[in-house]
Image 1 (cartoon, rainbow over the protein chains, first blue to last red):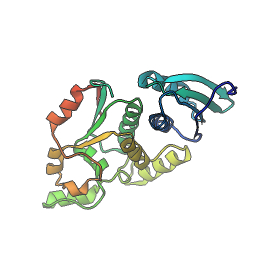
Image 2: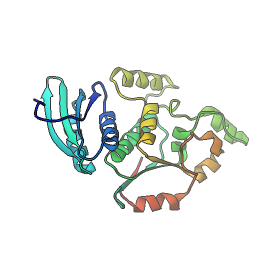
Image 3: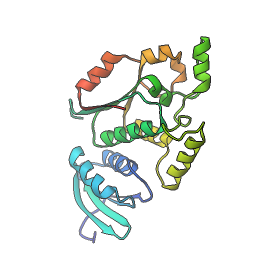
Image 4: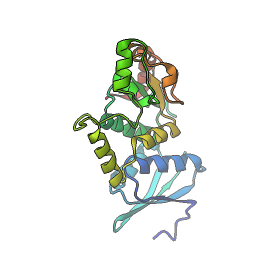
Length: 80
Length: 158
């Protein structure tokens, strides 16, 4: 599914529960250059609601998010 | 960071569950790029103590002995049963992959959450500056907290 997206960094958030996935993605985004795309995988079903909210409040772009069984894969781009 | 878009949390409680909630919210706010402040007052101070014995007077020393503080020592608001509840909660949190309070504290500091100790609470409970963990701001009062609150869109009291 991710062939067409150029990913700059892969982040494994599997096993982490709220609030750690959001904390880790925020840290990774902060350290990445503007425009960078981060691909992350998580197992906490809470990220389905939390990552879109985090993207809206932090002003970053959630490119897409998909469920693969128990795994949630998402792509975020640093906007500013 | 946007000005006037911060989050300020007043942590009055020193209960494990409430402190857990306070840190989770702070981390979420800091992750969203907000200026995030936590003002620790009264029992909340216990969460940012190193855990060594404190107190000068008889009452102060008794208090320090009965509740040494330290993020790993604080117990839940219910079902603590002299520490058994704390042990049980820690175990359950670990079993469910939920971060420990210690990890939350470290993460919050990593994300730039500012930890403000209440000077008056420290005086009353006879907790010296050296008994607080490294990385907290200088002890302050209500005016300093309110100034941060002025810059915040949310101010929470826990």
